[in-house]
Image (tube, rainbow, N blue to C red; front, side, top):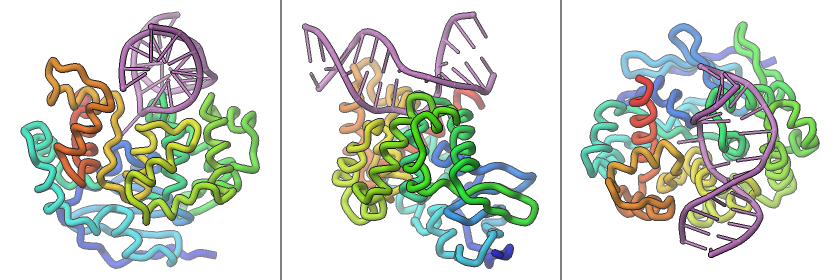
Amino acid sequence: MAQPHRLPDIPAADFKLDTTLASGQSFRWRKHDDAYVGIVGATVLRVRHADNRLSVETSDKSFTVDDAKRYFGLDMDLAAVLRTIDVDAQVNAAIKRYRGLRVLNQDGWETLASFICSSFNNIKRIEGMIERLAQTYGDPVALNGFRSFSFPKPERIAASTERKLRTLGLGYRAAYLLAASRLVAGGRLHLDHMRKVDYDAAKTALLGCDGVGDKVADCVALFGCGKFEAFPIDVWMERAMRYYFRHRRMTRAVLHRYARQHFGPYAGVAQQYLFHYVRCASFP
DNA sequence: CGCCAGGTGCTGA
DNA sequence: TCAGCACATGGC
């Protein structure tokens, strides 16, 4: 049986844990007192951030300091990246307010499945859907008193049915998730391979999934495949980008092209700052 | 009760 | 290309 384990504290300057976990990248973190508890792979993590250090308790020893650094994006030179995207007054305001927000490095399959569930949906319900998926198809995991379930392997969902997935409240997304799980389980979509190919190749492959359009593909590329030039555009980003287009007409294709040339290879980081900035401005 | 939610696929100009 | 529409569900 896996034993609780405490990692050596990780230097984490230029980092805001609460902002990062509240910025809509991940759906499985919960606040418990001054700590956050989440499940990464088959490991439960309990993390706290104070005095520029991240303390991490894990449910087993297979999760290392390097894994934690990579997951929380602490392996990125944030200062250098922010210099490249700090190119206008609006993104500058977002950076000033939320500096330390980082792009997480999540599992490709979990990210794909989660963002298939995210379409035309709200974050609270997405969290509930993913929790029920984990309870139904995941494996039990535990850390001290806390019990939960790992995110299901694609094979487990692939062996299910659309009807059963609908009973978990997935709605019309049930068929999309089922088909995607079968692509991955059947080896016809290699999410690990997406990390090695370039952004355009990864996005094209992701768009091959039914129920995955431009926006979801960019979320998966950014949060689940390490493609920092991916720039997901949803309703909040359209609101954010009105700043750049004032009275001009905006289509998503135009916004996408603009973002890539305006912000450059780390456009995805700019996207995350702008997204969080406009979303929180409407409910402070 | 009506509105909206980190959209997508389909259709017809 | 691009606008217009249906789509399941539940939180608020």
